[in-house]
Image (tube, rainbow over all chains, first blue to last red; front, side, top):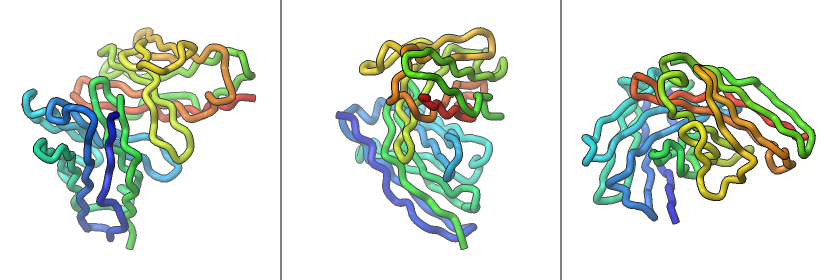
Length: 118
Length: 110
């Protein structure tokens, strides 16, 4: 059974940093392309970014609102995906989902809440 | 990258068919056959219902179907059931190697 479990969320002040983790199981993580998607309270889904598998080059791609502030990485030895979030803004407040690609969105984690507030 | 345009709400009676549209541009929906549809219940993670325009993952009822014409994709729910009441989002791969979501549609079963 495929499982994606996010952790590391919480309350952070504007300008601060936070790192989310996503522990994956039930599939060959090292071959998977993975994404992060977020959803602000009461709002729609927003694509955050994607990382390819290392065998496919390991490239990362980001949405415009987070480019330059967020970094996606992976540790295939730990079957874990990361989202490093720096220079956080109040508009980054959202539930963050870890998502498996190919096809995009075939599996989702339960989501983790990140609140940016002073 | 602007969000794809969906109607805010669509409603129908049990047994009826409804269609949700998803309008993009030649840089996303019109560029590739990589349109997906997701169903989301309140407080829950989204679930993939359709991928690559027309493909249903295992376990998704065949009353859910997808199509595309030009820069507009559509999700049709035939034989609407009470359990179909949820939010639906489309998404598309883009020429910038990113993904973009639709604005979301609330489906109400009357």
